[in-house]
Length: 213
Image (cartoon, rainbow, N blue to C red; front, side, top):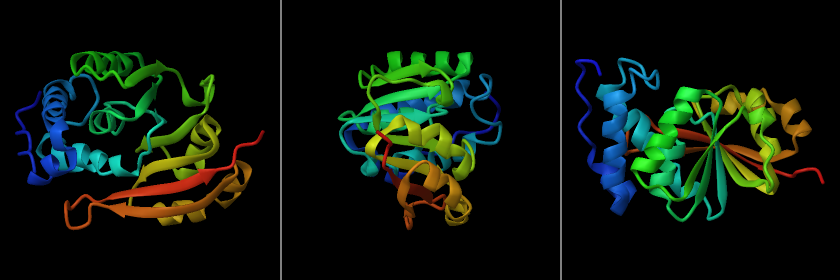
């Protein structure tokens, strides 16, 4: 851990995480303590860890439906572990290929007693699930057109993409027309979350997948 000071928890965190805030605090403290040494977060992230990462991820929670949600490229657990904390009524499969990150994710699942979260060490393109997922999330993984081959095949017919993106989200949709046709993605759109709550608003690309039979 660097000499940087961990950001003070914003008041809005308790509003969004409700009775799960204590677990979110434990996870945030663990990430602040070990994140840099494990290569999970950069050395400049502690002063903005709550707003840029934890709250940024938690804002997605209301978009999720009871069912099974996959998180592709979970890394530090953003958003997968945060969402697993925020939504105990949803089952999560965290998909991550790197061994040390998988170890971190499993350690946190165990310590925080997240019975609704499992971790799968696998590249997304190699995942073969017995039952396809209801929704898929990803954060800071790749451009939308490159994410589609990794995420859309994991979804059931009528399943939903819930992909966290940056300020160019709409342009990414427009650049992915060919891939959306190939992977049967319809109704792709950008939803902005957290306006008036945090400077780091959360942009999400939503889209429905009509899976081939």
